[in-house]
Length: 452
Image 1 (cartoon, one colour):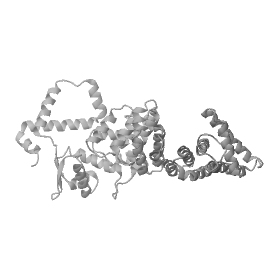
Image 2 (cartoon, rainbow, N blue to C red; image 1 turned 30 degrees about the horizontal axis):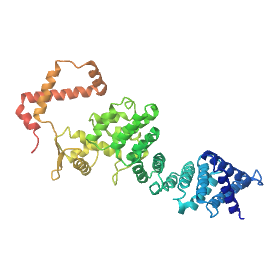
Image 3 (cartoon, rainbow, N blue to C red; image 1 turned 90 degrees about the horizontal axis):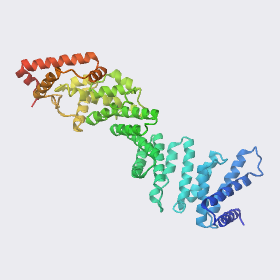
Image 4 (cartoon, helix red, strand yellow; image 1 turned 90 degrees about the vertical axis):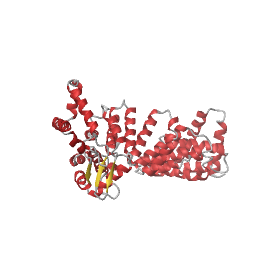
């Protein structure tokens, strides 16, 4: 009788003798058998020869795998034994080096490659064990690809939703670490279909965080900001983690393309007390107050960004932040000017007239700003400037309110948010416009008239 036949006979006898026992008893018997084979393999080898002992144990494991997959063993018994063997590699601290573990698991995987439908559980546990070893070695992409080999969609039996979801989330995490965003997004799509069935709150939080990270890396900053904010609201018991999530949310909100959606996201973040203490909050607040952003403020904020957020856009030399700030400044200027030449606009934006026109054209085309461009005159006309009746109505309301002092809490908020000199300047400008409308209504109507 060959060695393979002998091992196959011993394993078959083990299962026959344990057939009347519980599953736990059978598993305990298999564990004891495997450990006994390991000890017998190490006997006769000098104790100081660690490498030889490791190789002897590896040979024993391979012999057990070969015996299980030989014609001398019933398939059901083989599947149960290999399932427990793979579980030992996945869950217990066997006295084996990572190299021996990896070599045996790869060997077992190659042996069942053509019969994964029969050995589904073995395939899953073997791949998870191999993936854990690769994670320890910081080989993120290889670890993710190992888990991708688990084909749940081809399974002939119903797999637990939590197991599938956990595997997909782990693949997302690993591909993100490897900066392979497209592959991470594919796993996100698979996980998304299962998310509504998962009751594990911590796993759902991890999934939502990774989803926000993928959106962040894909430069979908509005969705990413909302995602990070939702995670922050789910981890209120962990102050530091909540702070980190809000920090990421604020950065994404600032980097988002200018427009009504961005304003809504920034307004939501502004109302969160925990966000106000963040170093990156000042620029968000300034954007929300529709103030022009200066180059030195851009440089200061860029130092707070993550590496992937400092990339340049396409063939341009502008970073994502510089582009977002230029769009914001255009958005602000559209409320200050009725029309402006691109040459003048470019000086304000710190770019060329061609780039200024391109930014405006894109914002108008995407519905983020109203206006039209006269390419012959190189002029953009912003729509939505205040009509004369709107100004008159504002004056009337202002005069009605002047007799009543604002409540103290409102005055304190205004004083905190606005520099006193800017408030005084704005007041003076408003008074001048009021006086002009009262004394020269015909001229004012011509001045504020929207071009045909």
